[in-house]
Length: 131
Figure 1 (tube, rainbow, N blue to C red):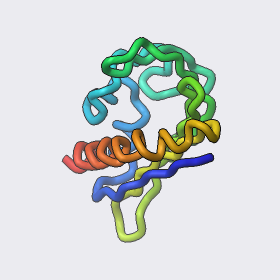
Figure 2: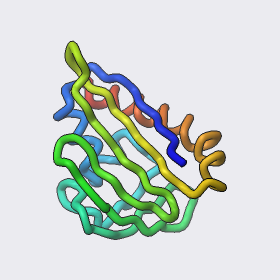
Figure 3: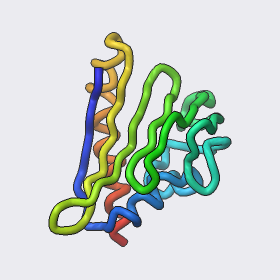
């Protein structure tokens, strides 16, 4: 099952991508993600794997599985596959998206808990990119 969240931003896709695809910059818009290691430098890279710490939780293993430079990247974090996208919006700006795929029993939990949080995080990303 897939849960999809997206927001619009006035920022150019390149500015959004710089924040979205560089693990060292995630803390600028996603304060719950701490210490991403081994996922690529400066950008995520397919085949890279490492650990991230999510506030309040033990480190979690993650692996970057694919990337379309400047447009999307996918990684697997535990049992969840997440695809991050940045698309040019008609008339300027960007559409920032996140698709989350998980086994059916987890899908409802993602939809009810993490999807609303993700929407707020993507809005924060949009604001940071617009500055």
